[in-house]
Amino acid sequence: MNHQMFYFETGSINPYYNLAFEEFVLTHRMEGDCLILWQNDNTIVLGLNQNAEEEINRNFVEEHRVHVVRRSTGGGAVYHDLGNLNYSFISDLGENKLAFGRFTRPIVEALKGLGLNAEVSGRNDILVNGRKVSGTAQRIFKNRILHHGTLLFDTNHDLVANALHVDPSKFQSKSSKSVRSRIGNIRDFLPKDMELSGFWAYLKDFLAGGGIVCDTLTASELEEVDRLKISKYDTWEWNFGRSPRYNVTNKQRYDAGILKFRAAVESGLIREIVFYGDFLATSPITPLTNALIGCVFRKADVAPVLDRFDLASMFGGITKDEILKVMF
Image (cartoon, rainbow, N blue to C red; front, side, top):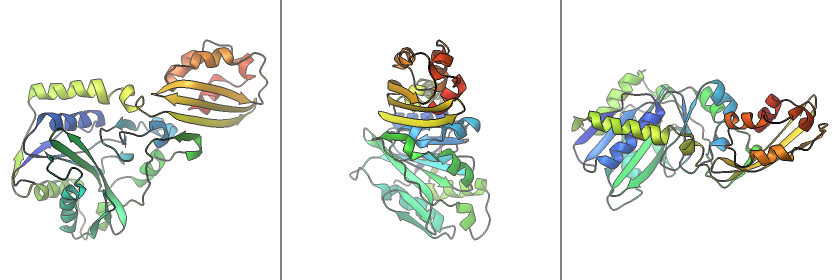
């Protein structure tokens, strides 16, 4: 990297806005080295090629109002909260198109500067004392490269585990799967305690190497960031509809009988669906399953379709809420 570093902050903890901000800088600042430090409120950030439903614990996510957003880089799903600091390097591509070490090295050196036993593991993880504290990913745009990563400073490990815990037997697909690692918090390894604000300030100065230039986007550029947020990162189509084709299956035992469910979902839409079990139906389910073909695989979209049918005769006393529970 050059000695001069243009430094940005997003001024937001909204994950949809922050990813739009990052993408705008990547696609519009075509010269110089840029650094963005930013935070997201409770969020699962999906890799570009992942199936959202396979990566999130939907019940936990909905109950705790965890945001779900898809980033424009590959890799696995990660959990962000306000104990987590994210960094983005944007620079000229150079000759080595996937030079993870070019960007992970400064982070490792910064951590070592705090007295930590930091190292790179594999291609893109950073460990301290054998525990993962950072995962990274990259994207190329024209002659520019984006390298971004997480830094687990003081994150809530229980929320991480619960938000990303999914029953693997429910889903079958060819999507990129996340690899769960033993994670750690940077703060726990520090020889002297430090607040996240102090870590942020230290990292900013270290990575800039004394050549920091604090930069901002203009009012018109920020309007473009907002438009990108609304048109892309805020949308169900981007965050869930991009999921590759997958099959989902589940079953529940209710007082009225066992209900089993299986569906094939593609681009977020139900392509095939079947219900079966030992419940005492008095009319066929086919009209309902036909009506669900092409429906968005989302509770808010499926529920109104269920309302159009006599569920008591089709499912022998299994209720609408119980059907939705086995589906979602």
